[in-house]
Length: 370
Image 1: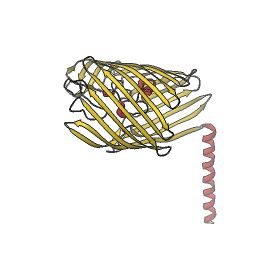
Image 2: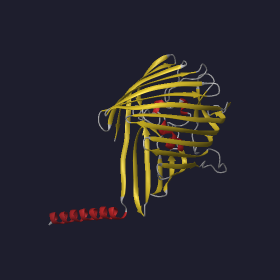
Image 3: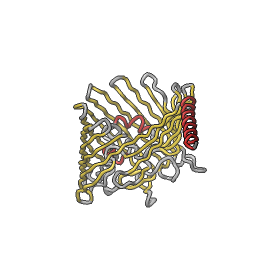
Image 4: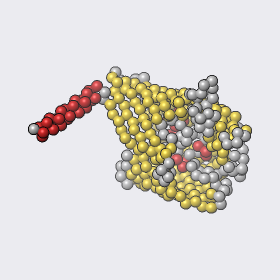
């Protein structure tokens, strides 16, 4: 008798679950995907305080993160979309707020509008034509990531629009609010971008304007890193920041040649730690890059960038090779060299500043995507 009642309850539970799944499938047509990336290795870095540095690395190509992404069909070509990601260090376990969170609505014909903590137009439309935003990853960023092509900073309080493709042309815009009472323009940002794809040819352009980066805790952007006068680097609050640039690439079979130019200006600069006024500064970045699929499992990539400010300049070149161990796992080796002008700090992105004009990074690692 007891066994019969248990069987009856189990049967009712299974039936209820099946009905619930059918109801969700019939009325909501939703999907959620769990994904992420793990990247760790070892590196040798020259000239840090007069000594070479050996270190375990986390995210030498791509930052480590996990994410959830999903969509719900709302009917009529409309759907709700969301993305939640979180970054972390493979070596220390530290959590990083360097990946997007957003929720929005998408329409097949009209495009997508999202709200949250998001990448800006530089990331979406210009960065793919740079080595740091393409094959190379983190270490290949332009000095101090001055154009944010390596998305060192995401925009808070951001509203974004992205169009569908019109014959290969896509475009979009972003506005990030200051969220400060009585200070609507203090630490806000806005920008535009567009890209075009036609067969083997791709091109893109973007512009970003920020008022008061780092001036408030809850505003659009955090403070930025800028070079000091004595080969040092400091955190800067910036009154006005403008970044704009163009890029393009062309694929010749297994060989892809690309290039990008960007200009970033920072005015109304103060030291975030001392509140001392600092000089305004501007950077022009000129980059050429190439990638070659030597074999199905082996790829090569490299780039050269010249960065110029009014009184300082940097040369940076690097090579990278990646070997696929499986569809999801690869091993890589890369080397980057940077030489700065006499009074400028040499610092490869994410590394400690050099004690001289030069810095060399040699690293190797393993990366897994899930």
